Structures are given as structure tokens and as C-alpha cells.
Length: 280
Image (cartoon, rainbow, N blue to C red; front, top):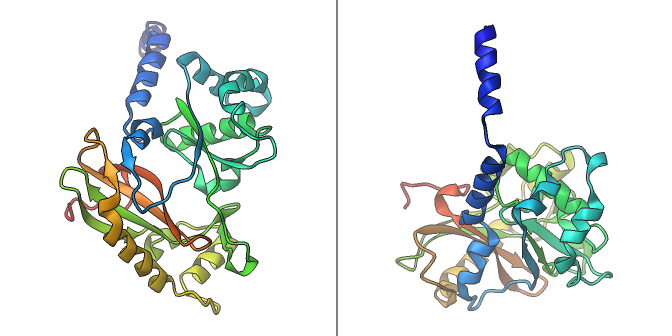
């Protein structure tokens, strides 16, 4: 047993940790799901909407190391603010923004994704901390976006996950090469999602959203098929660069406030929930 431990210790001493960090950094930069690796290749959103991107800052290897501290009390937020200056300079101190890293938006803790200029550094650290827990990738960049407008009427607003507006969403599996939809799903599929919603208040709201309880005037499936019909009719207006190939999932969100459908996220199909190779 002692010999085994000695060997493990010697192996650890011989590891080039800096090279490992560099290799991991380079892998993350090449990750297709990184925002900077797919968003610029949308040549025309056509009849779909998108929010303004305030900043998409790529972090250097040395800058990412500032987020490696796992103890909140020891995080050097002053240095993090220094490296985020190019992004901070583009932000209005009186506005609230939505953030994500290259691949992760932390929807389950949505309040972390809502930032002001003063809270950007702290919340980005928290977002990256959760990102590492879920092993999502994307820690090498940050995206700051405007917020999709919401209804001004309180009765129309439903919120789960610490403040996330619960709105109709459709996930489309789209063949980039053939320019065709393979299939689509309700992003908030009841059977898939309900079993993983543990917060009682969130579950009540989710059941209400799906017309499982209460007297909600909106029929979930009527509204879902309304936006699906629009997506199906308008998908050809969405233009991509030839650099994107294969089947990707595209997430569309319907916003009743302005009656627009927003393209909010994309990923390779096989890395997405609801992927079914038999349907491809």
C-alpha cells in the first residue's frame, strides 16, 4: 500500500500542471457551444428577434485563473473588476443586464444571471462556480446581453428559479446542411421537467403554466402550437454561415409583450436535452 501511495505521489509531482491548464483552456476555446463560436455565424435572424449583445469578452488563460478560488471570502474581486473593464465600460450603471459565460446561463439560479455594473464581478464568479459544478464548459468568455422585455401586467408574469420569467419556448433540432427541421419539442415538456422541480413554489407555478391547476386563461398547448406554426413558416428566413454543420438544437422563446419570437440559444444536437438519434 505504501508503495502505491509513493508512486501516486511521484506521478503527481511529475505532472506539468501549467500545461494541463493551458490544454484545458485551449479545449474550452474550441468548444462549439461557446457563444463566440456560433453566434457570429448567424448571418440573418430573418423574422426572428434577438437582444442586443453589450459585450462578448474573451478571457485569457491568466484571467480565468482569478475564478479558480473556491472560497468566496478569498476571491480578489478588485482584480476581476480590472480584467472586466472592457465590458464594464460598455455597461450603463443604471441598467440591469443578463449574463452567461460561453456555454452556461445558470437558469436554475436565475438571480445570478441578472447583474448591474456594480455586481458583475461577483455574479460572474458565482455563475462560473456553478458552471464548474455542472461541468458545462464556457468559462473562458463572458456574454452581457440586454434583457428580453417582459409584460407590464403582473397577472401575465410567471416566475420560477429565483426570478426567471416562465414563457413559452420551443427547441428545434435543425439540420444545417439540409436546411430543414428534423423535429421539435416543448422546451418545458411536463413529464421531463416536473420530476426535477423540487421547490414547491416553482412546482405550483409550473403546474399552473401547464394548466394542471388553477384557472389560467392561457392554454399552454394552444400557445405552444401558435409559436411552432410561426417558427415552421419562418425558419427559412434564418440564415447561417457554412461553418455551422450537422444537426443543432435552436431554442426559441415567445414573448407576448411584443409578440416576437427570440432566438436565445444554440448547441450541437447531440449535446442537448430531448436529443433522439432515431428522429435524426
